[in-house]
Amino acid sequence: MKVSIFDRLVSKETGEQERKSFHSTPYRRMFSELEESGAEVKEQYPEDAKTVEAFVWALKEACRARRKRALDGVMPPIKAEAKFFLSGDRMNAYACLLPPENGGEGIGLEEFLGDLRYEGVCHGVLEEVIRREFEFGYLHIFPVAQGKPPQAGEDGKVTELFQRRKNMRLEVQNGSEADFRQDVQLQPIRKGAVICLIRPPKAGTDGMDVTGQVLYPPEAVSAPVPQGKNTEIGRGGQALIASEDGILYMEDGLFCIHAQKIIDGDLDQFQGALQISGNLYIGGNVDGGVEIEASGEIVINGKVGEARIMSTGGTIRVQQGVYGTEGRTFLSAAIQLQAPVVERAEINAGTSVIAETISNSDVRCGGTVYVMSGRGMIVNSRIRAGDSVMCLRIGNLAGGRSRFSVGYPPDVPDSWKRIKEELASAQATLEKLWDPITSLRRKGSRISETEKALLDQLVEQRELYMKKRETLAAQLKTVNMALNKRSKGRIRCEKLYPTLEVQIGRLTEEVITIEENCNIHVEENKIFLE
Image (cartoon, rainbow, N blue to C red):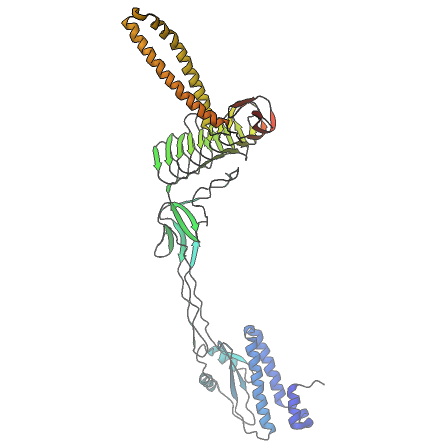
């Protein structure tokens, strides 16, 4: 037979005979009823399970104290007693009525409420619950008060309406390709535009435990606003706005604006000539013969048609391509030019050109021309590159003619050819002047005044041409010295269709056959295709 701890304690004090008689006393039933009532309350209020368990234990202790007094032979009438118990956080209070014993008096509702008040439970008293539960009588555990927890406020919040991009300028591409499928990684913004929405902190509300102690909510805090250069707080403190037109970018975790000119839509002949100090962003197309000059980067998010566009200190990017008119479309970038398509245009770039297709165009570039993505094709175009030309394909099945010069500053080969032609022309003119001057001088004193005047003109003209020949010869010498330097310039492509004229220094070659995997370069003063 199992023996409880309570039974063992009693047996030590009263002997085995009294322990056996204890099983028939009401206390055993009282414990059972308390445990049963506690289980019901825990099921109904599972969040207070530990509090209820502690209360049941305290009630049993009270019953044991009564039992001990009875065993000591002192058992005066015991009045019914209201027992109360608070949860650890004092947010909940429970009660239980212990029955009267030995002819003691009962307890009424009003007396119960008075006891509750004198125990210090003064807030959140559940009067309706008490009236209802009180009817269940003794040994019934029930809630009598419930505190009000503090309601937390809301911390401030910042909602960012733009992406956190670090680019404040157009990036110069270091590789051979540019991804034209994605938008330019720049965020143009107008003065007054909202960058972030700011929600101020909202204070919480106080709570109170069942003893009337005020419970304060945690303090709501403001969210840090990422305010940087050329931005300001507006709209009554509820927005971060742009204070300048420009490009929005991140620096040290703050939204900043690089001030520059923004044109939202298309630019055409109605705008005429446009000259900008700094960077320029155009959201649409450029056409109609408009002229643009900017000292910084120029970003055109649309297409370029008939126009003259110059960046005297930066890079030009045309997001949707250049579809020009021969002789009337010109783009010049001090650093780099980026465009997926270049058609019927004249291009001048300081360091490099990156495209996917170049056709019927004239390109001058101080560095390398890259046409390595997309079609990777150059057709019917003249390319003058200070370094090299890298592409997938030159020409097409329909035929055509392209002319490439590589390995020297773009103007050097042209200057060499031009100076040679001018020198030959000057020499031919001098030879033509020789005979008439000689004939007129042979006449000696028989020469007429008219002939003498003509002779003076011819001699003066010969002297001018002789000086011109000397100047051209000096220029040719300088250009020859530049061309004599060994060039590492080359032309690489996977497929070459005729015809391609190649010039590297003073060497020229005409390719009239279909070639593959070409690496055109100079070796031992000879042009090789592989």
